Length: 176
Image 1 (cartoon, rainbow, N blue to C red):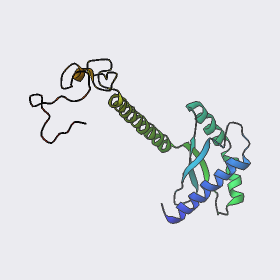
Image 2: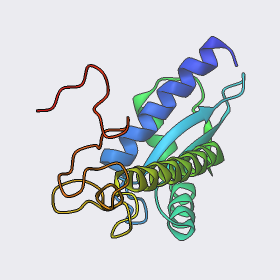
Image 3: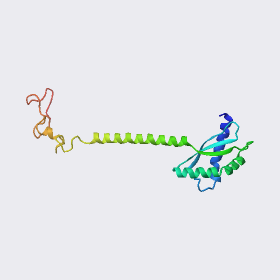
Image 4: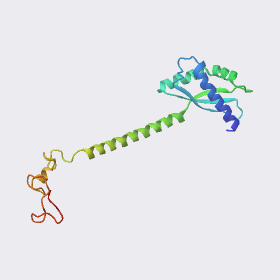
């Protein structure tokens, strides 16, 4: 595509977009859900393939495409009034499959991101939950674990670590 055909294609795309917004009164075409994504024009500038994207289901897309094809002559006339070209291109309208595929790809990526976030949330919940709630390692009333209170490394009833060296405190350790 040459620079000239690109410029003419962009100008036609913008003009058709304005026509859809302000000058088209067909109820089958919702300007809020319909947009012109690109226009392909051959070097001779006699035809233009207009690609549109329609937000909605297959039925909405078919209705909009039928309405645009039906109004192609009227849209072509409006373009002729806005753009001065030797020959106004004959318009054909198509649904832009690239746009649809892009949306499907983005949807797949979003689903994968949601799965990753869900796994991270579950992992965070598991890390935050106390180990063995209500089990042998659960905290007693004084904040020490029940296992430690049962005589495994705790002075009986005091909640302090027991001395390890034959009942003596380790060297350098002072009692409070």
